[in-house]
Length: 120
Length: 106
Image (cartoon, rainbow over all chains, first blue to last red; front, side, top):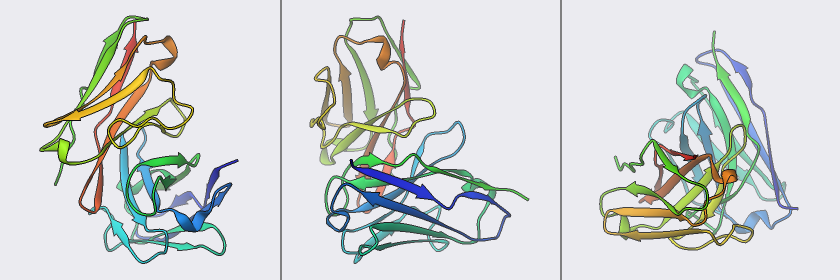
């Protein structure tokens, strides 16, 4: 079945780095845009970044621009989020989500999420 | 930056019809999506491109978008529909979510 599985979360000190991964199965990964969306504890949803199906276009939320990098390996059906200079306000569940199109539209498939806690 | 505004909560009696609003400047110029999120679970897409329902979503969920307001309507509301709902749209290359609405089924 169609599935997204995130990994790589954990507890990290402020200023440090972490890389998240999202492995896809059950659909042609290379045909769709892919996103990262996060949700701080008890808060709403916040979009983080998107990468187009071919990796040629990527866009970021202002809150992470210059610190986070989205990438994908279509041969491995995997999406990544490299997070640097982490701050306490980056603490959240990070979800990987599939777009309904090759680029930017709605998010029709979501992973279960991976928790990132930034704390000293 | 672009903002989407939702009411924090909306109440409805079982079996009745309820509407959840999402307001933004010239929102009708954009496609709006709606997500349902139960506690401890990832969001589920219930409406996209203003009015389309993904497969598996009950027909009682419908959407509209006009002027500055998009609306998610649930007909024949059931107790199982009591949870959080988020609207979302794209402002150029940035995705924006509304703050979320808690639907209370009394």
